[in-house]
Amino acid sequence: MDNNFLNMIFRSVVHPLDSNFIYTAFPYFAFENVRWHCVKNLVPSIMSNLLNPDAIFTNNEMSLSDIEIYGFDYDYTLVFYSKHLHTLIYNAARDLLINEHRYPAEIRKYDYDPNFAIRGLHYDVHRALLMKIDAFHYIQLGTVYRGLSVVPDEEVIAMYDGSHVPLEQMSDFYGKSSHGKTMKQFMDIFSLPEMTLLSCVNEYFLKNNIDYEPVHLYKDVKVRMRCTGTYIIMPFFYDNSKKFQPPLYICYAEQTRAVLGKLADHGKKLFLITNSPSSFVDKGMKFIVGKDWRDLFDVVIVQADKPNFFNDKRRPFRKVNEKGELLWDKIHKLQKGQIYKQGNLYEFLKLTGWRGSKVLYFGDHIYSDLADLTLKHGWRTGAIIPELRSEIKIMNTEQYIQTMTWLQTLTGLLEHMQVCHPDSQMILQEWKKERKEMREVTRNFFNSQFGGLFRTDQNPTYFLRRLSRFADIYMASLSCLLNYDPNYTFYPRRTPLQHELPTWSDQLCTGTFRIPFLQEMVQNK
Image (cartoon, rainbow, N blue to C red; front, side, top):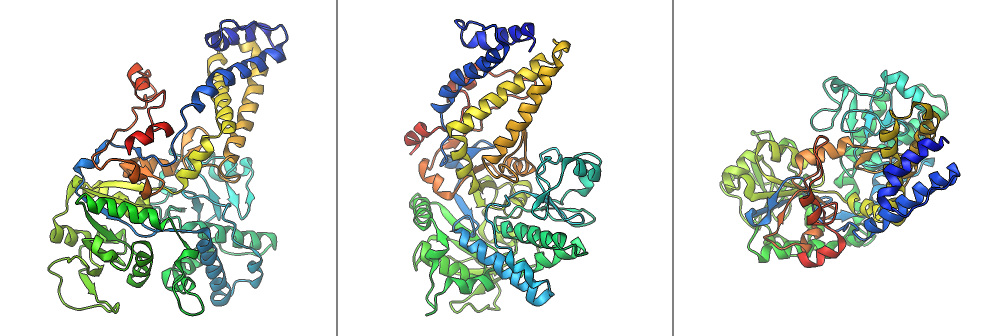
């Protein structure tokens, strides 16, 4: 290494951290000392301010004191399911492909892998490629999969004339591939088995040199996944004696019950709007809350067909009686204790008068649950992101913090030194190589194929971009509300823009990051 070059590094990086540091004459050890000093001085500070996985995070300032009405989706909002349910969905859809679409029986050898895919991925319907895309429509190289095998970067660049996906090819507003758009975005948690099944069938065809049409495969899997909805899956919730056995599949029941009870005790109105059928919801809610669960809710709407519920003014509400039968009488009022089917949001607003920012609605699907409500109707929105808890726990580990600290330091060195020393390009190339390797290591902390849900290397993911736009707040589960006072105000972190300097007042609030740390949450309860 160029010793003059290293001297410049030490003056700009090491000296501010430790003025007593003595530069060694051996370049290799000098460079390692830079790494050691960065980790030694920065990691302990970060480790003392770990993030709380049960915190609520804020995109848009919101006070709970302004919220009078709380609304909820059902699946993965009020109720959480174990991974066993995804295995059931995968197996049922796979068998339907074989039995009804005459797909090869050999695809049964591909079992469901819960660790293969992550939410928010895009699927190129015509090329049969699953990939991760960032907020600027750039493909993250190394995360493009054909079947179960990664596609080389050179091949991806050749196919897309680079790594950028033009707007006209991206998925539509709801993440669908329609009107000539070739990309489909998988935003639903239930889409994890769908992505895995697509990849497994693609893998079988490719491994056996079978010529097939990718569009047909995508549509067949899509249809079969719809058929494996609650009507087919629900029988698995019963044992041989026809007794409902939700403990095998439903998680966190006590926490959901506690949240609903807390809100009701503070005089908040509660409502439920879900796409799931009445019998499925009723069984689940009786397990979670109790037989009198409907007494907690002022309005219950099932089979709403979101997002059409938020846009189609033509469908009237229908009452569902205790036997699950649809009644034909006209609905003039949405009554507490009753269950209604279908309908539309415009009629809902007319009958309830629940409008604007006094309503907070929670859901797990950023498009189907939240987008229309925040853009067209001014409701406040909360996104339930179950993956958030596990990702934060990973980010709190010392190994991850050390890796990210050095990765960011190395990036800063590359930026700072790239122009000043043209004679040291070899060193810069070594750093770039190490930076690329460390990015792969960082990705593997979360998911070895696609990395984390919220970042593609340096940039936010396309998923995070939509989350930031359509959700005022987001959290791992509704139980996070138990950590906050009903009048708590959520303030978003004032992240400096690229042309702004960090301000001292930002650092005074909660350390450097101005986010809820573990030790602070006790004070919020």
